[in-house]
Image 1 (cartoon, rainbow, N blue to C red):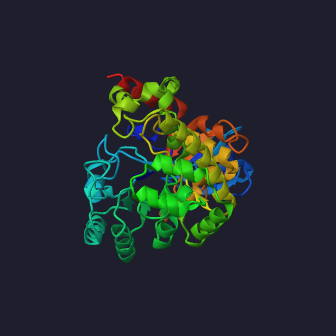
Image 2: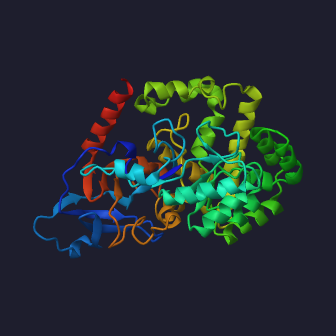
Image 3: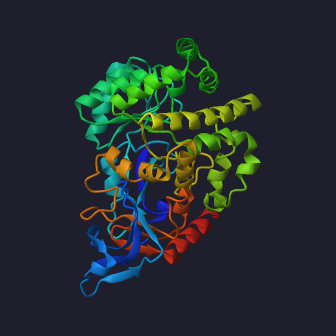
Length: 446
């Protein structure tokens, strides 16, 4: 997993050079700053270098000579959007971080290139029989500790844990991560309950893993069945069918007390639940931006994780997705901290584009548009520990931002209507973004 501030609708393409203005002003714009304050109309935002240096009512703004001014009338400026669960930083087909984060950064720090900021996970550390054969296999607590120490030294921003870790390795990884001051996040392994993972200090739970089981009146029984080889899909279906509201309230209060986050990745849960009806998914107009080889791997029969599943599996998946939507709404109402993430590039999860789908799903789950937007802006920066420098439109902060044609708090889908992007102080106007998309389309057909 990598955490990726997506300051554009298709952030992975922001690799071309753009000449930066020394000073940029967006005038007469409505600012939705991400702090939760009401929108402010008729404002001028001044960017010098890559930082916001002034925000004031346009009638009071005094711009130095040579400032490039963009008319933001009837436009809306929001902070740059973050996708908090993205794969592929090591190689295009990898599903985790690179073996050496420091080496990856050195290789990709070419001067003059535009790229979103990237926060890198460790490689996946899994059990002795990992889901992905190139994961780092860990069989016991000692190996788990050694892995954390090694990845801390190689510059990983956090440790990524998946589903098959042995029970004794999980607390060892948690303890070593705490000692070395590196967060760990990811799946709750099937050998661990969600409450135990939260108490151990997991920073975020991805995909709602094991949460439904801990909200079930049959938790003990289902947990035992899972240890005996019952599939996660079937266990979750039974958990949602035995939902216990009092247990859920106690669990969510525990999450809040422990300062733990949820990155539910509703968009990938939805797309995977619909893989049994792939013909409908293939009608998406964004399909044209996906390379041919990846399109083939998106077919259920082309992915080892799903190639042998039957109709009952897909039906349970659809029910589980609906249950997950309900869980997210309940966690939000209980004060839980929610992050927007997509799990790009899993099947039918489109880089950049699907982040907007995720925001819509969060609103459908019960988050107000303002809080859904914050899940990809202010709260994302807070999670990373960079809220002092990123995530909101305030003087002194990094200026990454998105200029929209319509008011996103009236309809969160309006985040798709992008007029321009500011990235590293550089203005990428609609014509530039369209050119990038066309280049992506042409590249996908090769």
